[in-house]
Image (tube, rainbow, N blue to C red; front, top):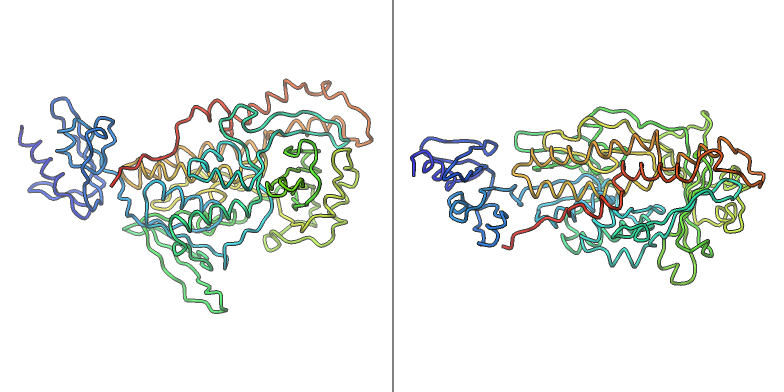
Length: 517
């Protein structure tokens, strides 16, 4: 055995506090040395590792050995690979769906020191309905949340598209009926957040969540990331800004993300001129009872779908509906009126007063809603990077998008699993965050752009430009666009959004293989 190889083995066996010590080398944990012995290459990554655990013979055969000594790697004919220390501290800014899902994903990947800071004074199961595509349902099921989803949500059976006169344009199956291995779920946002929140409390403990903590500034330090939080104790008193230091900071704080603002100095999001009015209404089931419908072009569009298994079990339907309407410039919604409750229902109903069909009375549905909320339809210009040293972004903080194609929550859920996977399978934080950025950013940015320019429903605009009247007359849609053309539009969008059944069904899991202690 030559002297150089012995020297490197000696260094690898003396890893302490992130540095390798030896008679010649003293190298930081980010440096890598390659040593060849008997045609076997050992890649030695000096990391901040508290201890090196031995691998079993079976793990070594499958090249699953991490955190073992290089000499043991040689003995077992395996690759010497030291992974990110699972004791690193991870701070999550934002306790919504993305923040809770990320905490669960990191925990499942073996990370333990996780803290969630949420600006709201409490975790509230508020909001209206959302759709979760099979690509995200898969991730929830693989985290062990499938039974809870099944108890709460509705597995969407199909989506149907209609002209404003009530004439059906096109329909296609969804979820398992469309060839996916996993269903598509429609569920109340608060119910989904509740499932995630309860799982976080059960698996990690309620103490990791700190509410009333609004991030006001953040940045990188020599040892990781820092964040300053404005703390509201909930009794009318406020603490001075609290400084939090961690190895990684992840911004999951939504479309108005303070993490993103601190990093990019961006202004307000871009408003499309479309206002969304949203509500939930308890009513008799319509069509199949598990149907999602979209009626009309985007400037006067109605989206309706059921979201409650509990209501279905009582032969009722709790439907989520979203009304989109073109807003006059003088009615522009400012950020300060974000998510405001609407009191004048007549103004909401007015653009949709002729949306009365044999299967659904839209004005009646709006009038019987529990509450109606108003939102601006906004997005942001895609970023060139989500990698900012030891800080990254996720969900709406990374890629706010026009809510078309049920992509918002779906893409956030996938982000969480992808990020946890990269942290589990890369040797350094830097490599992991760059791998996450490479894998997710360009893919999701394509969705943001597609929602702006070539959305899944753009055939509705083509048809309604040709047939704008709602006079009840039957129209020859094939004279404008054929069903084959519509199928092609739908397929292209699914490919862009990662919703292709074949691609999803064949993709490898994001579940990390964790070594037994």
